[in-house]
Length: 145
Image (cartoon, rainbow, N blue to C red):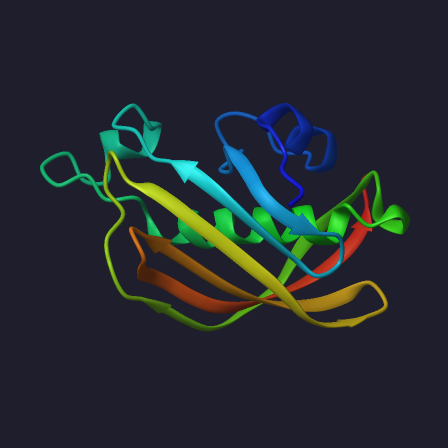
C-alpha cells in the first residue's frame, strides 16, 4: 500500500488550508485510484453557517474532497507532476447521507477513463461503511499559469 501524509499530498496538489480537504491518503496507484480520508471536526469554518443548529458538511465540499483524492491519483503520474486537475463536469451525483462533526469521511476515486489530458473518475464517499455521496467526476489536466 502507498500512503501519503498531508505534507506529501501538498507536494502533489496545489490546494492549501482551508481548501485542502484530504488529511491523508491510505492507498493509491498513480493513474488508477486513490483512497483518502478527511477527519471532519466541529472547527471547520463552513459549520459556522451550514447550519448553526444542525452542522452538516456541504455536499459540494464532499464532491471537492473526492475530486482532490482523484487528483492525487492523476497528478502523481510522472507526466502530470506540477500540473493541476480541473473539473470538467459532475455526472450521476447522488447525496445519500449527512456528514457531521466527528465523522471520518472515507474518499475513494477510481479513474475509469482517460484520453489525453481528460478523464473520468468514479467517486464514492462514505462514513462508517455507509455511502453518503456517489458520482462521476470529469477532469482535465492542465498547466498552472
